[in-house]
Image (cartoon, rainbow, N blue to C red; front, side, top):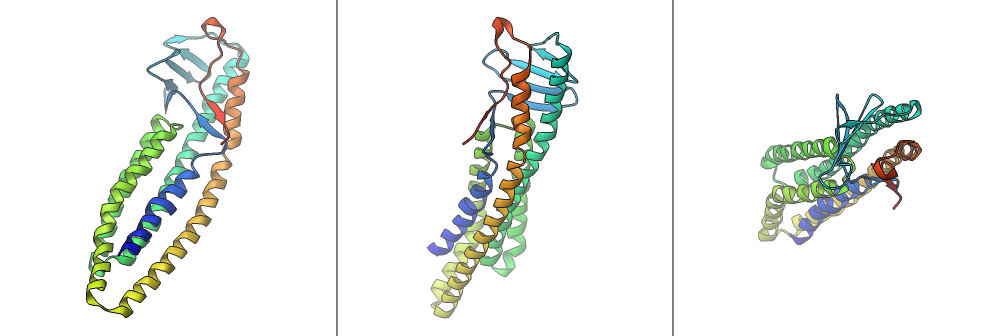
Length: 252
């Protein structure tokens, strides 16, 4: 029973969500002290502490703490390009995050179905689908509000694990206990064989999928670099001569 639970934990907490999640952290990672949101009224950077507290970009115009700044023609174009780049980048990053969740749940579902009783397959799938829908909603909300807040993605992964474990443990433990109590050594060996094969197959497939996910994430790095370049080239200065500092880029 302990081995089966360990395999479930590997598939769930390590190989699936954690591995997929790691590939959301680009080597050209983006950080922001602001909450970022996008809608038809523009691109907004907002924070409760610090100055400026609210920066809005829309169609080449820039408002800081409610006051529209007078921009040079060059900065007008830069602000428009900045907004357009973020609008193009965030949806692509969100898709990668959603696909990472898909990788995790596919692995978890295989574990659940492999070790749950035949009569419970449909119920297990339904419960997993409900958890998956909730997690995807959290990812969407996170990217809509703070697309570069890594801690929020960390929290989503952690909460996903805590939600999925109860869904899996009952049936998996039940299967192991029934075989252990039956004294059927052949059945126990077969379960061991199935568990070894499943672990190997899932790890191999997840490695391939997460490598592909990492390549897709890395392909966004030029857009991240473009944002950093645009911000650095802005001519405008804040009160006191400070530069606008919305995003920072760093490599792990």
